[in-house]
Amino acid sequence: MASYKRSSSPFLKIAKKFNCFYINGLPKRHCKPFVVEGHQVGLVRPDIMVELLRYPEVFIVRPDSVELNPAFRDFDERTARVEQVLQECRANNTFVTLKGWRNECYNVHSVLTDPPLLRMDRSATCLFGIRNYGVTVNGFVHDSTRGLCMWLQRRSPTKETWPGKWDNMVSGGLSVGYGVIETAIKEAQEEAGIPENMLKDIRPAGAVSFFFESERGLFPNTEYVFDLKLPSDFIPKNNDGEVETFDLLSINELKEMIASPDFKTTSSPIVIDFLVRHGVISPETGGLGRIKEPNYAQLLELLHVPLQTIYHRAPPSENGDKVL
Image 1 (cartoon, rainbow, N blue to C red):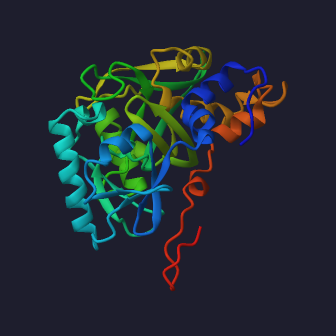
Image 2: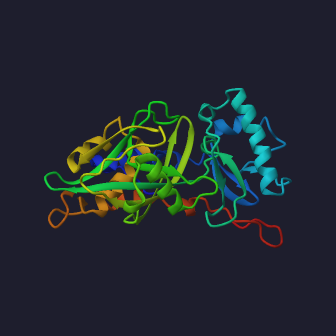
């Protein structure tokens, strides 16, 4: 893996922070692949493995992997057996992340477009390094005096994760039963009260991917990004109780905010990506670029970490041998 030891710009420092596992943890190779039906779907840290050893009938800890018992032959059985373990761990306060149990599940795939292998409460996916998929809607305004501005939300102080932190205007995970565009529209209406007539102008803007780690676990995340130009007189209004307030920030204010400890670390890649795509961050001065980024190429790489190739374990071949 490439080394990122050259002097860091403020944006590169932020990128290293939301990619702390990719840069510091992944090269150490101390985690083992989490394998379901021959597919690598996650990574398991040593501290999690120790606890999983208590459930050998569910998790088989091998020298080179942690495997969900292959005797569980279908989606429902796998889901039920993992759920049973997680509920016991939750009751015993084994893992801090399970204190934020959501009763909201994510599907676990080898590839997002393939049928799911099981589902798991979203609070537990970080224990197994399961790839998460989410959606963010950037609400922006071309203000006549302040120029390009972006709406941010302050998360409710009662949120299970990152309480009270500043965040993107609208974001949400891909829960069971919802598609990407469907999630974007649903979250825009619930979190920011954006009416249907404005949502017709929503535009897909690609995706960012990164690999973050905290005390709760591992967070390999792909975020589908949408841009939405809003009228200058529109003010977002929360409808689901998960937002404390909204604020419209200029580009200069935005740069300061994402470097602040008051901003949600795993939301900063979406803001940086927005600034790159809108010509604010540039490899050179002049033109549309207002900020010369000396580490432009490295920064772009850290906005698009290759999660699909990191999780590379293939299914068994026809003769039963694993193909790696």
